[in-house]
Length: 158
Image (cartoon, rainbow, N blue to C red; front, side, top):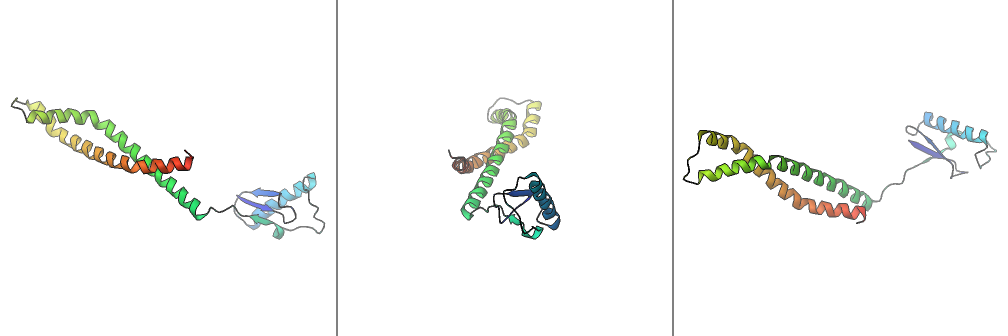
């Protein structure tokens, strides 16, 4: 979207789709003519008017500190999203990992293990490894996410 105004009437804003171009200026001129025909234009254009006299309205640019704050918010959201992903992964594998962990305890007793238990234990090592690694990453991400939560709270005015 591009916006134009008139030097004679800066309160009049003409909005057209696209970028500043001859076509966009022609569309803005059509809007201007419609406003003149409807009597909506508070300015009299006694000397005529052309597309070259349209003044493009530039959107306000953010200051460097605001841009840095916005970047910090985006980064904080990414960190929190990663934490949520890791939490789901940890939660989904927790029960299976604890079952395998119980079988590990059987290795340290004098009680015999069945063939099925040994097979389940050997197959479960991947699950146990995956859970343990995800859990460690989750704990680390949670510590990092504390700062992200503070950044977000600051941006939200909390």
